[in-house]
Amino acid sequence: MATEPMVIAGGGLAGATAAKTLRTEGFEGPITLLAAEPRIPYLRPPLSKEFLLGKADEESVPVMPSQWYVENGVELLTGTSATAIDTREHSVALDDGSLRQYAKLLLATGAQPRRIPLPGSELEGVMTFRTFDDSIRLRSLLEQGGRRVVMIGSGWIGMELAAAARSYGNEVTLLGLEDIPLSTAIGPELGTYFRGLHEDNGVRFHLSASAVSIEGRGGHASSVTTNTGAEIPADLAIIAVGVAPDTALAEAAGLEVRNGVVVDASLRTSAPDVLAAGDVANALHPFTGEHHRSEHWANALNGGKVAAKSMLGQDAVLDAVPYFYTDQFTLSMEYSGFPSLTTGIEPAIRGSMEDGSFTAFWIRNAQGGTGQVVAGMSVNQRRVQKPIKALISGRVPVDVSRLLDPANPLEEFAAAA
Image 1 (cartoon, one colour):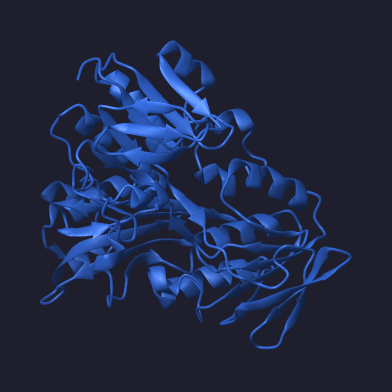
Image 2 (tube, one colour):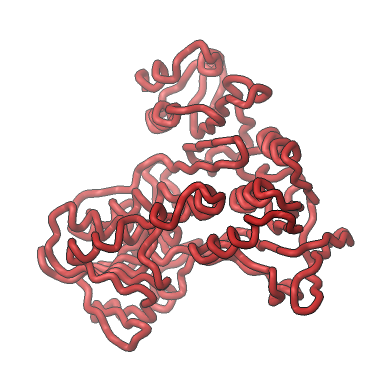
């Protein structure tokens, strides 16, 4: 294993982190990293936040600088994809016609934007959002202001893009299938809070409503028609209705696929010597005993590290508490926890939503005044996610009334856990 070749299919955060971890852990053999895009691996969160808003430049987005791959002997093949896996021969076919042998193979192929078959979606001014080039293009379209933007999709990315578009002085209308944006993810009370933030900043909502067609003039989008019969003027229509795991390579190789590539807690797939990490992996989590697929950067970062250690035969499991964050207008939010465990639970609020600084907790089995925290979301608060994660992973019942009193430091509860 010290010198046998490692191949990583996927040039995102999970793949790049795995390559770095292999070297950090002392592996000296060949590493090939296949990046489908003609760019070195980069971070996705800034694409809809700092970079899109012009607060970060292109140099801040790569996971590691290009020189790192050269200095560490990692063969980085940009603009190159794996087209087939032979699990018996331990080989990967590339789109340039060549083959790579592997001792261990990591699938980090990520996800692709979901597309909806809208008439008019081929018009100029209609786009999805996923890549660095998408963010560059969108920033160039938004930064002059004065455009009529219709956002199709009211999830996290849709809300972030709506905030960015409005911050540049564009007219923004947001369509979504939910009556309240984000309510499936965080509940109606908090979803209403986010809607209010956007409306206070001039975003218009059409909920619940879906786009049924995009009309054009001279080959360019001019309006979006909804299922309610509304015709909304649009110079730019952005389709942000989620992503789908890119499992084609795994499926063709006969790996078990179910809402992503199914892996155990060490990120091993159903095929020997093949692992999966990041957006494409549906991983068994030790905390819940269930499989979870996460599309957030923390999962890709932690998954890349765990996958690399597993590739080296080390005992490693992906047991980190899931985490993500969002920035919208003046709001900064961080969330840690297990969304699957929050179903049917109304969040309990610590602090003041009216003042714009609070923490929401999802607490299970809250009988008799005590319960177990399974998720926590902080809004415009700093350095609280570490104790929140400790509360979740500790599984220790907490006194709910004391937890919700801001006079009691969260670190006190975390220490008890």
